[in-house]
Length: 347
Image 1 (cartoon, helix red, strand yellow):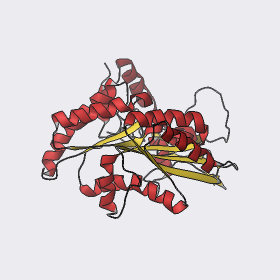
Image 2 (cartoon, helix red, strand yellow; image 1 turned 60 degrees about the vertical axis):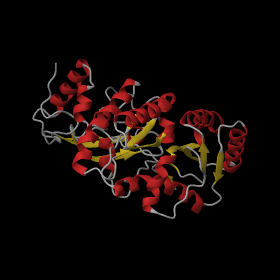
Image 3 (cartoon, one colour; image 1 turned 120 degrees about the horizontal axis):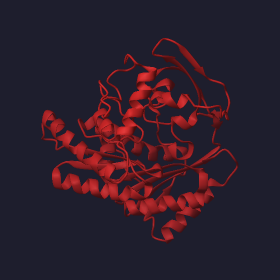
């Protein structure tokens, strides 16, 4: 049995062409990489109607420009992906999952660094969840209870296709981490059902936000070492500039991707919340960029982030992007209004 390891919330409805066009991420990026890292070749319909076949089945092909990379993450602005050749991996024979309680985001980053050293490439997921997020998961399932009580929760998963004692490895690692005070509480899943219940918390908090209604959503990334600073600065910004709004911090901490979302007060009318939300987003983007980070770790630019994306590019970067767009789609037929401004202005 083989595994295609791209795993994301929309995996039940998304399509592989869209995954390639958006360079989708997900919970397994830490181990397997983004969609870009999982694609060997593409077939693409170009703006002039020509079909480019870049599917060859080769793992190594160092023959000039790697043209498939132009279309991966282009969000349909350079061509329409009609065929994808992907990498497959041996299906894990064993998986171990643990749900942990920690005192801070600093402790979570320190734990991740230690896990990378002690557990090596066996880590398939390292998710971080601020305790404030748990109430959102309960909107989906009122009976849901986190197995630990702590300011920060971590969901760690190890997997292997070989006969390795993952349980012993993870138990020993967590025992040392608790002895050193890095982890305050830990529950090692005793069954597949219990592991699923841990993941249900992570998945439920996303669904719970949607159930509550309009909220500010971000997809920020910074260096892993800067995660605590991002969360601290973002929380302070919301508290000082938007009192009454509720910040939520969670994400794929193993690759520096934090979804720092903010819920408006329930009594605030939606049109007012959306107007204020634009100010919240701008402030959060400024914090991420100030730390040398990105406003889009895995969700892409689309239409909602295109102005911020374009404004953040250097003149040289803009000229390169505009030249590429002009060369492959001179009439602007491909997904107009997405990723790039409707009319590219190149200084």
